[in-house]
Structure formats: structure tokens, C-alpha cells
Image (cartoon, rainbow, N blue to C red; front, side, top):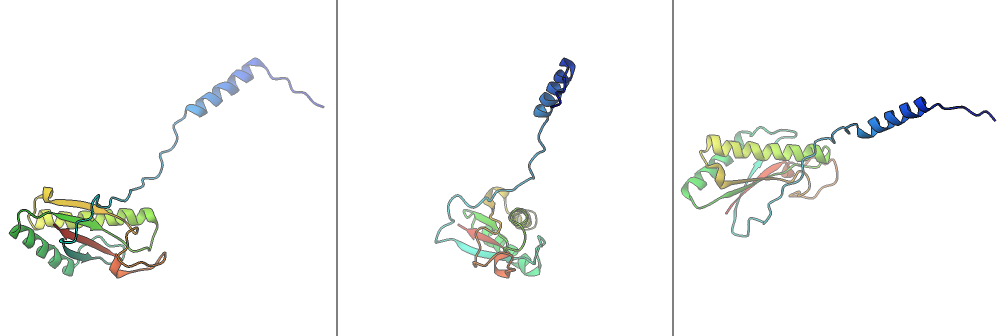
Length: 155
């Protein structure tokens, strides 16, 4: 049997390396966006509008621009009303990607209402759910135009 002799400087060096590696910062986890559903459902008396989106898109198409204009007009005529904007996606893509996408879609509609529709930002509550609260239940990786939407509830 072969015995190896270890010197004190070698033990000290090994200890220092172990200590430094234990103290090294861990890489940050990937940026994950959490779902942000409405804390309370807008209610049965809410008026609902829907802005549909193309796959992987955050740009509001011409039909969506008309819906945004209708929402802005309604809010202008009803100064006591507020809107809850809820971004959603279908199940194509990862959960994290869909959460980001739904967040960006909700922000796009909110920004269109504020900057193009002259709606005060404090009258808008922006939320997103990714693919977790589908309007129509589908399996994984199923493209669904119905689920690629921003729902707007005015209450």
C-alpha cells in the first residue's frame, strides 16, 4: 500500500481553495416572470373587450387598434370606470417565454390606451397570465388564436 505524505502548506492551500470556492457568488438564476393575475375577478357587470394577436407577436394589428379606440372612447365617456388589462398566450413555447410574451402584450395595449387613447394610466390595471389561464383549454404546444389575446375588463 502506498502512503502519500501531505505537507501543511498543501493542506493550507487546499483549505484556502475550498473556502474561496464556497464563498464565490453563484450565477444568478434565469430571469423568470411570474404570473400576475387580477387579485379579484373584475366581476359579472364588467364590459369585456378582446385584442387578438398573431403568433409570437406583440404588435397590435388593425383590428386590435379599433378595439383599443373603442375602449378609449368608452373610458372617456365613463370617467368613473377603470379597466383591467390581462395579457394571455396559447401553449406554444415555454412557460417562461409565454409569461414574458403575455406581459409584453398587456403592456402594448396599456401603452396604446395611454399614449394613443389619452387614458390616464391610473385608470388601467395591467396583468398577465402567460398560458396558465387559457380562454379555451388546449394541450401543450397547441396554437390557439382564441388564447393569443389581451382581455380588457371595464368595471
